[in-house]
Amino acid sequence: MTILEVKIKGSLHSPPLHHTLYTMTEFLHKFACFDCQVAFKRRAIEDASSRSAHQSDSNIIHKCPNCAHRMAFMGRNFAAPSKADSSAWEAAKRLWEAGFRFVGSGYHSDPALPKSKSGISEFIDNNPAHKQKVGKQRRWADYA
Ligand SMILES: [Zn+2]
Image (tube, rainbow, N blue to C red; front, side, top):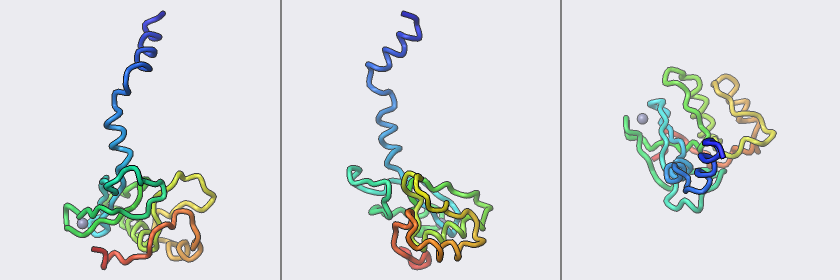
């Protein structure tokens, strides 16, 4: 047996090293503040067993650490635009207000969510039954 084989065999029989860390990471979702144009990973649900890849909202309220506005639940797959990219943040806000979330496996035939505000209204109008439109319509300004 080579040293490499011993290492592989050994790792198969010992508990996964980062098991606890991995489990915690899996339950973190992205929350955004559209005013500050920042996003953070936070827990979304108290009971991890009820999680779903298509979860549309959080039952835990997270406030923006910068301005204290309630942060919007974006879903697990939201990739925060850079702070300077106001067009991308405007697109994310419009999508969120229309009920779109960055959820699911990504394996569907519906068009990808736009990353800039140009054409965003048309996208929302043209995709009323999009697979990622799983949330309620809300207004950011009234969200608390
Ligand atoms: Zn904020």
